[in-house]
Image 1 (cartoon, protein in one colour):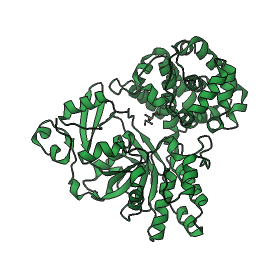
Image 2 (tube, rainbow, N blue to C red):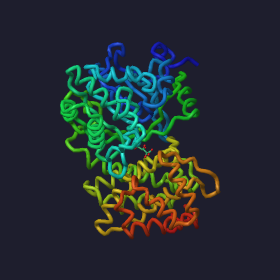
Image 3 (tube, rainbow, N blue to C red):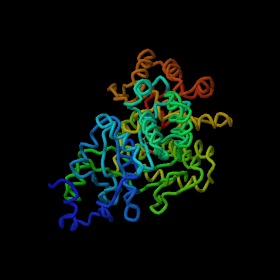
Image 4 (cartoon, helix red, strand yellow):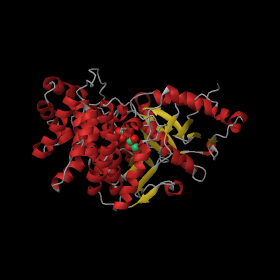
Length: 491
Ligand code: CS2
């Protein structure tokens, strides 16, 4: 089978299959955006929006960068950085070829080139999907973690940074030296007020780097619009590669599988200019926060709760978990009774959003693994479940289902499943969590106490709230004694 490439997509065979591919002249496209974290999520979401607008706005091509591994570059370089986006649901799979990514740099071997590219006057936006942990922050407070090994490294070696804040600040310093206006930094990660968080972290890093008042003032002028980004993107498998090859007749080393739904809400604050994102379906607004809160608390809060309960119940995929009547009821209740009353939108809007989410979770073609979502719980819990819990406790309201989500995470990070088999817990704090679990054994009180003392997750306030501590501990006791399915059934 021929490899996907610019010449292959012009072939009659591909035309005959009716595969949509770039309605623009790719050779006329020039870069305007550098994207840090060129993973599956970016390629299913922002890169597709940009692909839609290049026809009329060819100066907004994307240079992608991966901060840790060369795998995306290695997969895409031999295919002219093209890839297939496969959109799947029960009715079938539709493929299109995306060409908006013009190059991919691997920061670990091409760092100088990446920073130089970011300092190019043509680059007006630096966007990010580096995942929660890529911000090197304390998830509970949202402040830069000054003891984070990558930050310690970057402060000692500011010219050869490895962290996202370090790379951004190095590029900004170069732009300032050259008398260029700064680029806009657009976070596309699942963090509360992601723009504000990115801004706080970059400014603090710049301050610690200490390159003078002028630079501090320059960094103050950088804008950090917040965005709410939404599309479910499971990790690509070999089975997916085979499905895509069968449809397109081309060998794509790294196609991206996603759902039909997509949403992007962007704060309109781009002093250095931006492409007309609104012409391709994005919503440009003054304040993204209500949208972000709704998404984090309803979609992501449900996702994490389903991931832990589902995994422990033996469900490999989200659609299997949500098909379980007990889990469905917990998730429906978590959204309706516990999350929705904390959100500023109208009841009708929230109900429609909830129903749409339940249908999206049930998409049988997505094959979204519970294990994938279970990853990095320490970075996700604060904004997905704990913020909602804080608001409800303050208002004297119940937290049964949210607390079950937290307890299921605690049970999951013990690293042993209900059949006594090891769980591959992926988390920056995995070793610490495991050590706590090993000391506590199967004692729910000790386990809950040990994990609640992880202040990066729970802060210093929540562990002191007796209702919270007791509700979580009772659920954890039941999870350990009766298992996840039975605990869900009883709730
Ligand atoms: C998921 C998200 O992996 C996860 O933690 O909850 O990636 C989710 O699929 C996206 O936020 C959907 O927009």
